[in-house]
Length: 196
Image (cartoon, rainbow, N blue to C red; front, side, top):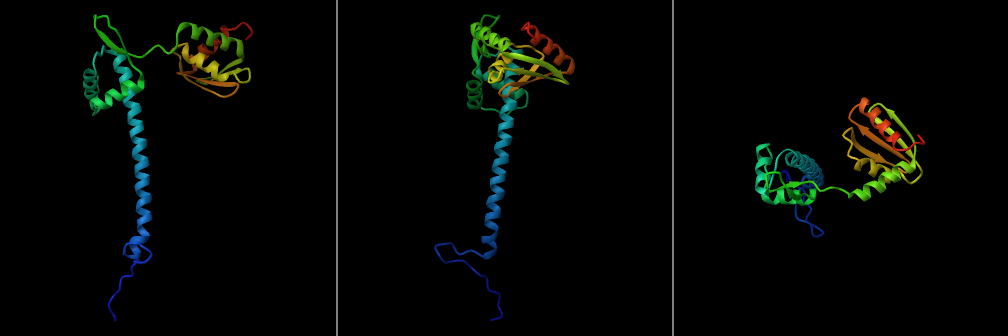
């Protein structure tokens, strides 16, 4: 009985496989799960990049149809289907508005009506305690519990200097494009109320 014998696990309802295969199976599943997670992350990043590209396209070109948008994306190197473009339009909540040419074009919707913006701006100015620029950030202190609403008001102002905001309970970090623009933004926010 000098011949090599492969041990198998054929008991308890399992398939007969070698011990080596049993040990490596969990490893293979783990690798597959990691690859799936990585793939999902890559798809999310690609989707975000593509949707940013769509916003850029409709901001610079009158796009009337989904086909025109798909063509513009393909010209920029994106492999898209009609279904993908349709889903992106829905997720971005693009609307059709009158174009100067007399037809229609895709556009981003106005986030809030004027009355809502005025109310948010009033809440911002009423809740401000302190504003200070630090590098390309502006740190805004508000009354406790007011930072989220105040940050939304800042976002809705549409100031070109502001890249975005992050709010906690009573503090907002406003990211500006540069140190100089952070100073300009801080000054503009201070002017919104006479108490600062």
